[in-house]
Length: 121
Image 1 (spheres, rainbow, N blue to C red):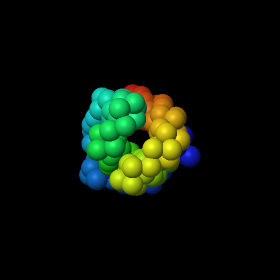
Image 2: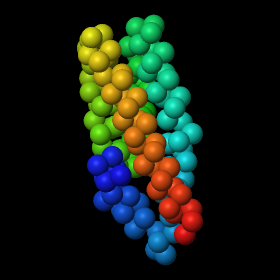
Image 3: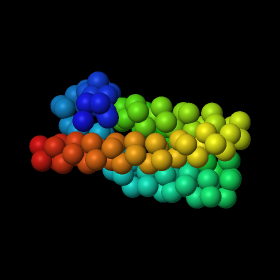
């Protein structure tokens, strides 16, 4: 999980609570899990339509969520996706989309495990 998530970001989120309550972390994870699949789908759908604006908006939103939770690899792919969509580089976007899907799946798995860990506390 450490490769997928930057645990220093998770620790920082946990430190924001005086009593170590993981509520903020759990809320952010829940938002990511609820909204993330739609963002990934929006990128895929945008690619199918060659709608660069749609892909950029979705990648931008997902990049922010990933960064907030320390999913650095996903954040990086989203950043690259944003840059490619701004330049209308279809080949680059086509190449990045499967990477985005894989990194999202890895982040989701890691965050679900983290969610279980802190829900049981």
